[in-house]
Amino acid sequence: MTNSFRTLLEEELLLLSNAVETLKVSYERCKDCIQKDARSLEELERLEAFTGRFARATDILVQKVFRSIDEIELENEGSVLDRINRAEKRGTIKSAEKVIEMRRLRNRIAHEYLKESLEQTFSGTFILTPDFLNDVDLTIKYGQKLLARE
Image (tube, rainbow, N blue to C red; front, side, top):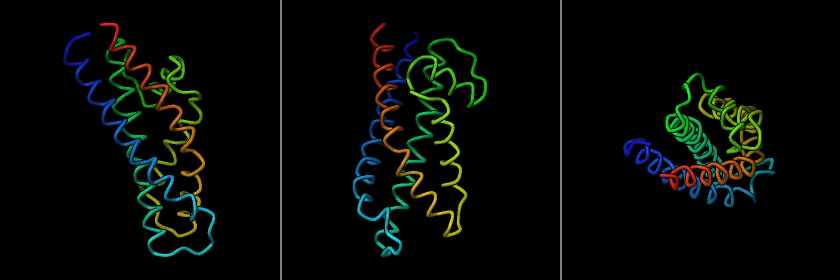
């Protein structure tokens, strides 16, 4: 593994770890307001920050970390779907199908504006976050083992 790929993976794993820490804080802060029918402006701001942090963290995982691991392991880049399927084969995620669902949710977060859609986005993000956090743990462990080989 070249030093530049090693450095890049180290930086991206750190970026992912930092993004996940802020996501965890938002997840905890939103537990009390996720099931409410009526929310205060402050609660809506918390939920919007939470979904934004989820979207950012999923991007870092799929677009940066998975791509760097593929580079190090000399895999052809291919599509996002290819990257996700390789991650499942490696064991860095439990289910490619779940990560695809997370990517679709990420896209909804970036493009939804209707109140009804926001409710689905909030609850979907809250439901998928524990699976996402587990996948991040698996990926970080894999990345650290990959870095330790050199």
